[in-house]
Each structure stands twice: as structure tokens, then as C-alpha cells.
Image 1 (cartoon, protein in one colour):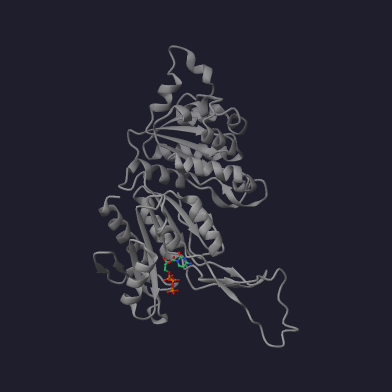
Image 2 (cartoon, helix red, strand yellow):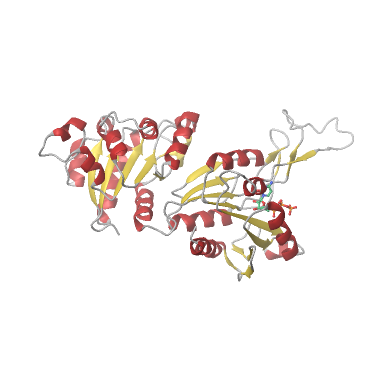
Length: 398
Ligand code: CTP
């Protein structure tokens, strides 16, 4: 897969640095040559000797090592590979990358390079969630940096959440997708997915039966073609796609905020089953049944329509906006009206009557409605629908 390819691997100073040894082996198994660079911090976690022995290459550590005329200069080192992989990418290294700080060899190489860069962030969950890091993530994504992870799970510091470095196999897969040079390379695609939960009180909420399976499948299909995906998901039971930027939300209002923060993008696909309503006065405390003589009455107010908002943006409207129409009757008529009223380019009609088993199920049957045609697709798996949609996007030549 990587025969003849040269990967510059920058190892940052974090506990996950031990996984970089496995990463070197995985890249080599696929035929790549790995040129290692270690930060000062990285050398506290793994020894340069192990990295040199495994990679069968000199380890570059110091900017001033490179001043010797017999050595490769930092500009050349930064550009002589097909891909730069930063694993683990610490919060500090990401901040330097976002702001163009060149204070050591690793950050100087990252500033001097014009080759694609893939980073595998690894840090404590609070550091990952901190607005400073999240702002840096946005800057890096805007600058075309590719991400692998971070993943959610138990962390070395004893906490749980996003911040674990992707496993070496996942990083290699992400690297292959970049090097494969898919037709959607450098395209930023935003996808909403799953249901939203609208709280009634601290323990109860309004939801719907969406599994998020179709959204995840669409993300996987687009990532495989090289797209940079921002995946904004409500509380879904579906497995999250890998190698993309995931933003988890609960409510429609949070989803709209996340969508706005992810723009600009080339294509936006709204597959989420967003609750049209939210509870007007959310109770701070749990509602008790005693004392509700007339039963429980809840007032609802309308949620913002995310698809409509983005379709009607005056600035930064994505070139292609795709919505779904979940209908149970008057399918074509309702979906066509929905496309017109929302102002999106394509709407994917699906029949969500209980007897179809589509909502929450494994299969889907789509009619794609655009300004010029209604194209009926046969019933197929949700991943086949995703591939078909990805193909239509590629054919459009966005
Ligand atoms: N949608 C959205 N924000 C909302 C409601 C819907 O972004 N508040 C998007 C969905 O993601 C989908 C499209 O709008 O792409 C249509 O959703 P659907 O549930 O079929 O229709 P609604 O707009 O909710 O209208 P209705 O429930 O009356 O059919």
C-alpha cells in the first residue's frame, strides 16, 4: 500500500508516545520508510534508541543538528516525505501548529512543510475539550490538517472521554486515505446525524427513533474518498465514523451552534432527525407526580430549522446542501415541497412508516429530488445508499 512512500513521523511528548513504536512497525509492514523526529518531551516517554532501531533510521531531535552542511536542512527534511504524521499530537504541539510557532525542530518542520499533515491528538479529556484546544482544532482543520481521532475511552490519567490517541492501525488507515488521493480530497463535508434529545427535566427528554446509522455510513463513504468530514452527532447508538472530526451534541440548539462553528464547508448533509420542538420551560428539578392534579402539561416551542438556516445563508453557503425528508404519506409531494421551502439543493426522500423498518433499521430506500429530476433508487443497505450518494457528489465535480 505504501511502497516507495516516505513518512516523516513526528513523535510528541505524551504518554501515548509508546504507541508510536507500534505505528512505525505498521507503516513499515505496508512498505513505507519512516523517518522519525522526536520532541524533547517525547524522549522522556520512549528512548530515541528504540525509535532509531525500529525505524532503521536516524532520529532527528534538534533543530541545530541540521545546520551541519553534511546534514539535510530542515526545509528539505520537511518536504522530502509524502506525508507528515504527528503522533501523539499534544495540545502544546497543536497550539504551536495553529499559531505558526517554530520553537523546536518538530514545530519548525510543520511550519516549513508543504506536504499533507495528519495528526493523531492525544491528551487529557479536559485539555481536549478546553475552548483553547477546540479553537486550535478549528484553525488546523481550516488549514487543511487531517485528523485521526482522538478516540473516546479510558485514559492513562484515570479519566474517561475524548482524548485517547487513535490506535496505530486507525492512523495507518487515515494515512492511506490521504495518500490514496481520493476524488474528494481537500473537500470539507459537514454531516449531521442521529436524533436530538430535548430535555423535559434533568432525567427525562423527548427523542425519536433515529439510530444515526445512515449518517455514519455517509461519513464513512465520504472519508474513504478523501473528504475531510466534520460529523455532528446527536445521542446516537451507531458506531461513530473514524478519521474525522466528531462533535457530539444533545439538543437541536446545540446542533445548530456546532454546524455554524464548522462552516465554511463545500458540502453539507443533514441526515439528523432533529426534534422540531423543545420544552418551553425546562424544569431545573425533577418533576414530581404528587401535586399534578390535572396531569402533566408541557408547552413546546419550535426549534430552529438547521437545514433551512444553512440553505439560506448569504455568506458561506455550502456549494451543495443536502437534506433528508422523512415522510409517511404523500411522499413525493411532501418531499418536493420540503425541498422548496427549505431551499436545499437535493432532498433524499425516505418513507419512515413503521412497516418499512427504515427508521432505526439497516436498509433505506431513497428518491433523490433535485431541481431537475426525481431519481428513485432501489431499496438497499444504508452503506450502499451512502456509496451511491458519495458517487453522485463526486460526479457533480464540486
Ligand atoms: N431538519 C433540521 N432542523 C430541524 C428539522 C429538520 O435541520 N429543526 C432537517 C433534517 O435533518 C432533514 C430535513 O430537515 O434533513 C427534513 O427533516 P424532516 O424531519 O423530514 O422534516 P421537518 O423539517 O422536521 O418537517 P416535518 O416534521 O413537518 O415533516
